[in-house]
Length: 127
Image (cartoon, rainbow, N blue to C red; front, side, top):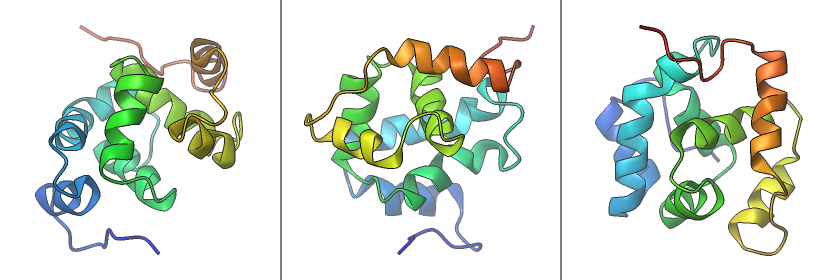
């Protein structure tokens, strides 16, 4: 069951998803700041990554592990993997297993390129 509701502020969402984990708080703050620039096609804007994390039941330290270990602290890759899952390029279960170190996501950079084939503006920096 999702934790986020329509009345939540950004701080409420960070509090609910991070579960007090400082690394997760950092990642969520970064995504709120940069998500619209990284993924301009996301209809949910800066809320898109948080909503996906919530719908996949990824909370607390798992957010930090995803960002730090799976995505090597690359925010574009982090948001890209969430989008790849949403677009069906990687299964939700593969994604969750990668968090548990049971089945790593092979070549996450290739998944990012697959996202860019569907969403050509993904990850482009505009001046």
